[in-house]
Length: 393
Ligand code: JHZ
Figure (cartoon, protein in one colour):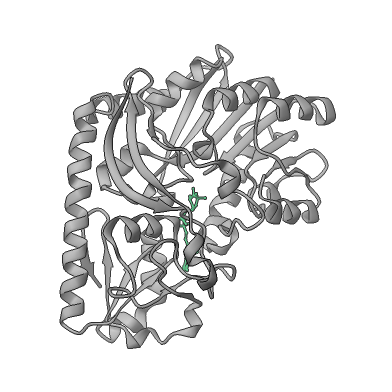
């Protein structure tokens, strides 16, 4: 049974950055979150039609965050070294290609429904299917390209509504000794750190190792290794194989135990989280309003999907935050979804005109703080809401 525990109110599409003339036509939906008693899966209640989100205008470009390029290079090298130099590779949700770029063009293929990005990997020389990941597509790939030794996906599987179909498709396409490796934000880290901003339309599911273990097994796959990663504020990299074709290592049991001890399988844990989220909102609004009343200037770095959740849930608009800077050219010149804060390039503003920077990309806190040393030396301070609402420099 699905039990709702959190209501974040009305939300726009987190990555649909808007032009002024489109303000009137923005799409909103009720962002509510619940937990399935049987599988222990956390999901949002109202799924948004995928084509509304993943289309030719999808702006999130992995390659715009330098630390992520490095992350994917290291991941690819590790998989190549530790898992028999896989040649027949497939990436689901390949975006601008920083992962697949490390594998042979002759045997590796991509699946990417956003045509602006599928064109990028095609141009790089990789066969790319501009389609959503389904069992029908897996059958087509078997016919045209053959089975795969490595199927990889980063920040993509949790974007897909129908997980049974997703895992069945993987099961079909995976060679007998092949591995399926995917990484997504970790539910445990979100609960521990109160990072409710990982919840938005693009994340219809938030995975625990516990729920994935249940869902994969019911589709003929099993987890044999779990890596806890620091990227995106805490993610899990899951390694799976056909059931009974590999032995789970200690990391699987350790993660399941850690989650059990935290209470991942108890509904009460989610009720406590919901209270923490409501308190976080109160504190952040109080802090921003207080600073504004004292005449302080506040800006934001990172027009993230996460900041769309925070701004809309907390009602943060231009009355509190003047401007957002972002390195993504396609976001610049537009406005944040729902709350319409203008987005510009970092070079367009003088950061020293501001007293405070709210970190929309708090997951890159160290990179940003390191780059903005002059701001701090001049008395500037940062604001974040993770793990608690706080000011730091
Ligand atoms: P970042 C996206 O979420 C969407 P977002 C998606 N659904 C997903 O699953 C997660 O990623 C994983 C900019 N930036 O990575 C670049 C600066 O401006 O936190 C990006 O627009 N200055 C696929 O949007 C944004 O911030 C910088 O110094 O929450 C970061 O977005 C750096 C480092 C980044 O993901």
